[in-house]
Image 1 (tube, rainbow, N blue to C red):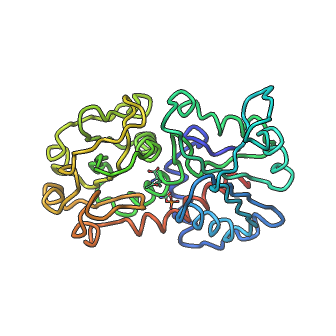
Image 2: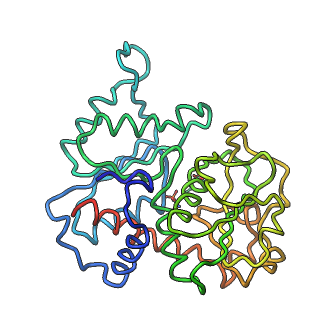
Length: 311
Ligand code: AN0
Ligand code: CP
């Protein structure tokens, strides 16, 4: 079994329940991974994804090896390429060789944010799927970050006070161009789990319709916040004007005043977060912030997924 999108998981509420069982008893399956090795290939930096996935593997008795390729290891992807320039290894060999050493291969690779077609076709992940002979685990691809979404669903399950809470995904300012992977995944996984979702962002920052699905889009941030139980915040760069960051929207920062419009709502963010740009200190440091709980749940999200991949 691969774990790349929500379509790889049957019965999402059951996966969340399995994660909560593992959280209560992390070592219950600590022989499941015995004799097996998880490879973790990072083309970009990571704090949470790297350590929580290693921890999850460790809890399952699964050995893990991290390969950090963020320093410019360039793979060739084109069929028939004459490799006389800067790329020293073809994906065909790289994926096949890693398949000899590992039983599962986790990959993190951010989008180019230049070529929308390549990014949204998941060029790198598709090539690894084609040329690796072992299951692939998504540690954040060009368009999706499913382990983050599972951790977010676990956190919502733990903190919701009603069966169908009001969940709002809000765009927030950021100085750099960031991927759409986190909001894309949050949107599809919350809806796949049966929740209604409201998305609020400035005009022009619409996400891909494939990920928005049936969510309500509300361009007035304060109106969107009214009565919300969870405010999930994330910056993303433009999908329409592909990869362009939106500047001069500092008034979209999450403040205490805006949180006061909610139903004593919780604040969520996947981290890393830029303080007093995305969200002000008072919100992040308040009791309503669930960011550290979300980060903790990354371990159990990864563990529930790896457990299914090993069974
Ligand atoms: C990345 C992103 O926006 O996708 C990783 C988030 C988990 N964000 C940053 O690098 C700031
Ligand atoms: N939330 C998240 O994926 O963080 P890292 O980039 O540190 O892994």
